Image 1 (cartoon, rainbow, N blue to C red):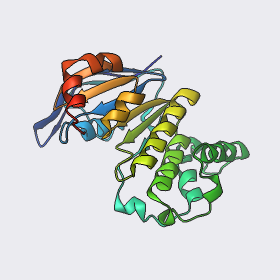
Image 2: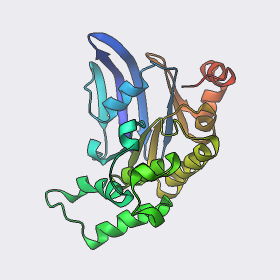
Image 3: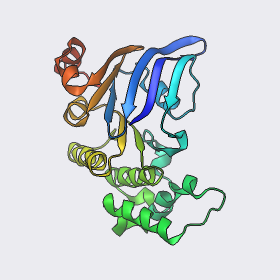
Image 4: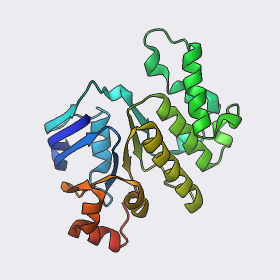
Length: 236
């Protein structure tokens, strides 16, 4: 089932092209990694997917009744997030607000979904702790649980493992892969970790101000673009 399609998608900043001619189709259950060097246009595309930036030209089509507010979003880490003065429970609960409509009260079934997501992320036992007192890995699990509360369709993750140590990074990728496979939630991830992108993704979108590649992971590995980027040890 198609969820998102782009056709000749192009975005500009200050009348200058930031990224252009992007063409892809994302289906339910796909795991897309967006890779490319710094300044390649990855963050601009993320803003477009969240409907925070309008295309200069081209089309970004949400299909099968997908709405932008149904995309669970885990943004890049910031110092503000790291020191946010709230409990784990408060932060995760906030991810469900869009589903409540005009009546901001949590029903019994709403709370069950939220607590189930906390259990899945392994953070239920720390639900009353302050977010600022958690480790980096725990904070990312909290934010992932929050994003998961917003969606049953698509998770958009923007460089989610920046600043995490190698062991925690691997655990995080394992967790996202489990969400993709067991819950059939589509993953769109901007990744710095090309080796994990290659390991877990079903599809790769490679940007460098324009689209260098979009397609199956196996085809990417065998492409000249993929060989140059992966074998050269490049990072996003």
